[in-house]
Length: 230
Image 1 (cartoon, rainbow, N blue to C red):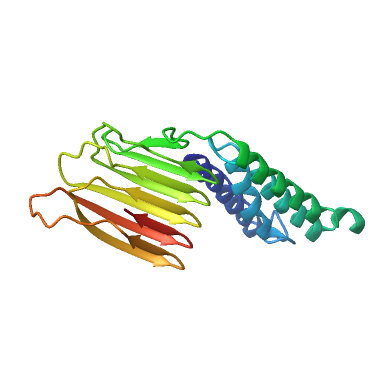
Image 2 (cartoon, helix red, strand yellow):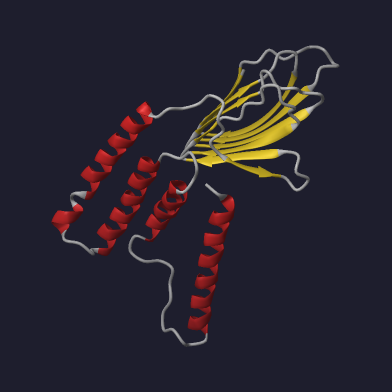
């Protein structure tokens, strides 16, 4: 999910909500509330729309999720005949099945990064983020000084096995409903700090005992997902 677009939408919604309550306080509106029948479907519809335009995302899955949110909203609002609303769930299941089939036959490249790359203020450390998709940064023969992974409802593989590491570096990982692999080169030391909620971090990497070895600092926040280091 593109954070800037998400922040823009949230900001605009907050402004409209503030204006609505302000007009109510001034007496121009008799009753204003942000809660309506099926208001919670917004948290399905908005992420589905954003993920649909996310590069590398599964378009069919995003469409199925969008239809699910819209279908639930229509059902709660009673906008359609009951017989029509009964078809929403079967259509969603069919689209989900199609998305699985399409994904199985899609060509994937082990060295293609399907993600948005956002650089920090100094332009040195990249940030890889994806939602409802995959991201696979490969630093084969490239200098690595650190990065951040932000993965939600997807997967990621950060391959540093052939990376050029000339000093201590940091990998920050924020994982939600996703699986992430961190592949490290031999001869490094590991400094792992993790915070998990209904998830786990598995360290299979053999850390070096050499005090002069470069240290890879790993700061992981894993929720409903997993991070594997090897």
